[in-house]
Image (cartoon, rainbow, N blue to C red):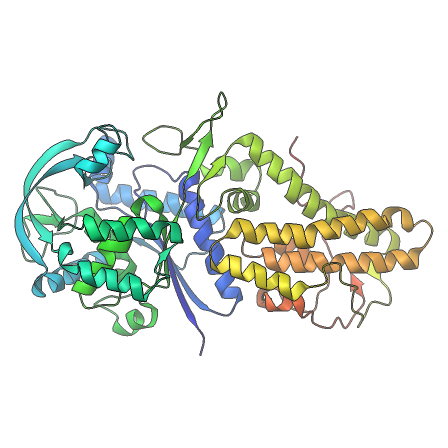
Amino acid sequence: MTRKFFITTAIDYPNSRPHIGTAFEKIGADVQARYRRMEGYDVHFLMGNDENTVKVSRRAAELKRDTQEYCNDMANQFKEVWRALDISFDDFIQTSEPRHHAGCQKFIQKVFDNGYIYKGSYDGLYCDGCEGFKTEKEVKEAGGVCPDHRIAPVVRQEPCYFFALSRFQDRLLEYYEKNPDFIQPDSRRNEIVTLVKTELRDVNITRLGQQWGIRVPFDPEFTIYVWFDALLNYITAIGYSAEDARFAKWWPADIHVIGKDITRFHCALWPAMCFAADIEPPRSVFGHGFVYIKKDDASASEKISKSLGNVIEPMEIITKFSSDAFRYYFMRECPFPGDGEFSWERFATAYNSELGNKLGNLLSRVTTLIINNFASVLPGTAGQTPTPIAPDLAGIVRQVQRHMEACEYNVALDTIVQQILVPANQYAEKNEPWKLVKTDKDATRLVLFNLIEPLRAAAILLKPVLVRSSETIYHSFNFTQPWEKVSYADVASRPAQADDMRVIAKLDERGKVPPLFPVIR
């Protein structure tokens, strides 16, 4: 049977366009989805927008637009950016959609019928930016403001319905114990366990007097609180309460990819909600780090935030360079389990060093030498096996796989660079085929044949990250196996080459192979 893999990202507030911090999450999830597809999984990759919020309706009002029209337009803008970044999502849910509204109402009714929702009133410190209540401890530790939005919360009192989260303390702790991989990376685990042991409180899950949102079916005066409804997108998108067979196929999710700032919602509130509705919780939650902007005038950096006004849009980078350059930088330079940093200077350095020199220049050298000196064909290479430059390819692949599956993309990429591309470039510098060809074409032929192999291996291993460039590398040669069917297993078990190896790269108007990654000067 084909293994299934259901992966999701956090859904985003569409009160403004996505920034590079948001894109960091989506790329990380996309790399995992693409890798799993290569490994033979039946993948369902879900993304979406979180639209039932006060901020969204307020923004639409500011623009004098109908809220639903505004949401639909922003959804199209988000999808435009994600497609420009080659994000391979299978479904994009808007929480204003009827399928989501219907699923939410059935879910909350189920939890109410099971006895885990009760009516009361709430007094607390409310952050308008989060659209949520903050604890006194959180506000105090942040100096009297919301730690995420740096604005002072206001005291808010209102009648509401509560979800009896505190009743799930023992069950949550038991679930963490039996499922040690549920909270990832491990650095997030202690925070959640401490929270559940010491600070687990019942949660206000409704709002009163809101016109925009999902009505509570057992008391239509109220709408469902955005956090309670937002989490439900993971199940409403795959047919909860409407398409039983489809829901049974995909649920539980294999991994939710979310920012570390919302780990509490996903690792405590969400599994408790699942318990209350008699469905399984997700198998794992991965809380990635943040991207910080390097300040020009100091060694300090600051978190990317719409409220701080330091947003860089992905299209700024894509249009100047490429989607692959964008994807590579953030997966290579920003550790997905931790925090990363962006500056234009650092971007140029990483791009030139690895994409430009170690990968693009190697491809250019090999293809140009074969075209100019061997009429694009290396004679006598049919059925031959190249001498390995990186001898333990199978071991390298296992390392890369382990890091990919742990979402340690920066380490996976470092392994590819250091153990495949660096040795290949060292081999080229040692043998100097651009000089050798003047005196010994047969020896040059073998050197170039050997250099094609690390390019093939790198193209396959980089396929989940460098979506377009890796395909260009692979299609520069007449490899036997179709690109669409290559897997990581094929790196170490090279299919036999029936014909002589030849270059089939597309040439530019000058008759030269265009540079894969033109140098940033």
